[in-house]
Length: 136
Image (cartoon, rainbow, N blue to C red):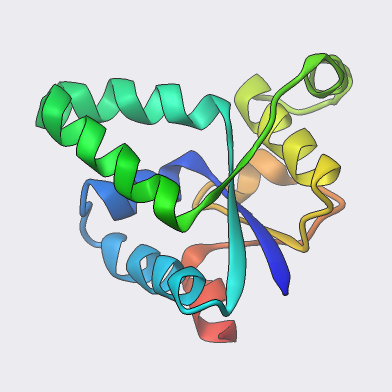
């Protein structure tokens, strides 16, 4: 089964129903729910998502959304090696570098993000949600 690391922005599109991006995000999560692929999220993304969802939807809604998310997605760990390698990468954004290193460590087949520019140096194929959905 293919493994994909999903960037935080795609997960937020799904959980917060952000138009016009939510439709593609929902199809990605439906594919995971149907067993078509395995979705992974970098562990650090959970705290980011919690912060953003609490601010926009309140604490109870944020908790429900993250509980739902955990039923659909696997969690890629962030450890010392991950951080050390991310700091050594020539990525413009540390968060993208950490997510990339998570993808490398779990041997992901691809990264799904709306921020393709942040992953220009990736050796792992990077697809936008729309491109990924069209490839299903």
